[in-house]
Length: 308
Image (cartoon, rainbow, N blue to C red; front, side, top):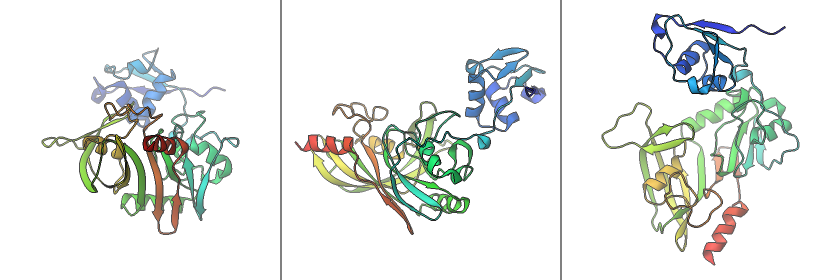
C-alpha cells in the first residue's frame, strides 16, 4: 500500500513566502533538502507537480502543498561499498583515520550515491551508521573539499564523535596541510580574516570587507611556513587554527598566493597545468589520535617537475 502524501496549507503568515523556505520550515528539513524534494518531483502545489525551478515561487494564501513520503536525513543510509579501495592510516578505540584521494567526496549528498569515502568505510565498519549527524554523514568528524587529498577522521562510536567534534570546535586539533602556491612566498606569517559563504552550489567563500557586518561571517586564522621555492611556485606548510569551508584556499588567494590549480580562487592558478588544486591534508593530531599522509603522486610529481 502506497503511503499518502503529506498535505500542507499556506496560512496567513505564509502569504508570499518562497516555496523552498515553506517546505524547510514545515517539514523541519534544511533548505537544500527541500530543494532536493523539488528536484525529484516529490512536491505538488494546488494539484500541479513542480520542480526545482519553482523553489522561489511565492505562495498564495490557502495554497495546498502536497509532499510525497520521503526519508528524513537521519534515516537515510549511505551505500556500503566493500569493493571500494580504502587506505587506513591509523585507528583507535572509537575512531579511524583514512587517506582520502583527490576527487573522492567524503560523504554522499543523496541516497544511492556511490564512490564516497564513507561508503568504503561503512563496508568495513557498519557500526558507524547513525553516529554523530547520522544518515549520509554518519561518523564524519570533519570534511575536506572533493579535490583536496589527505587525512580524514571518522568516529565509530557516539562518545568518540562527541569528543572529537568538541576538540575541533575548541581548536584543540592540530591540522597540518601542504600546499603549492603561485608566486614566491619567502617568509613565515599568519593571518586572521572574516569569511562568509557567498554561494552554496557551487560553493564559494569570500573575505568580508572592512565596513561589512554579515551575521554569518566567521573569523578564520591560519599560519604558514615556506618549505621550498620551486621556480614560479612555493611549497608551503599551512596550519589552520579554525575550520571553515575553503578557508585555506580563499585566505592564500586573498594574500596574493593562490593555490596552484585552484580555478575558483586563483585567476591564472592553472597556468602550471596542475590536475587539481594542490592542497593536501598531511597530518592530524589530538592526544592519542594521530595520522599522517604522504604527498600523493600527482602532488609529488608536480613538485618534481617544478624542481627540474
